[in-house]
Length: 175
Image (cartoon, rainbow, N blue to C red; front, side):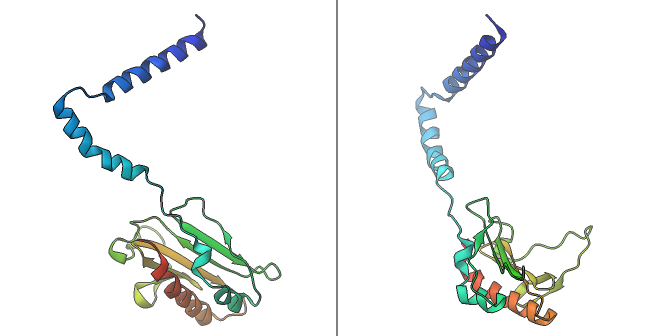
């Protein structure tokens, strides 16, 4: 028998041992198995798909970018959302990210790690500014961000618009 056949035989044997260990033949195991089945079914349920691009209206974005722009999803995970709207003429943009569930328990942003440089400053409603026009906010027990990168806006205007967008997005973030 060559080496490839030995590896395949070992894998098949291991799989059979694993499957045999999963089979129950006693009444006490049946009760335990049935109580764990719903948890397995719940874990296998499809995640809620978050369409971050649908959380802002075209007017919300076009007002800031000066032209109608379609959002482009930048998320690679269905239960987290991200979207960017970019004016191709100016490269100005609005972007947002809906992060993992549980990253802001009780809708409170977690503290910043004190060992890291902390350029944040407080923003309204428990939000915090990460930089100009870039705000982090809690919604749906998630830490989320929105950024307004528009050069013609002052620092205060960028910050105010980011907060306004966060307030529009927050009620739509699933918990």
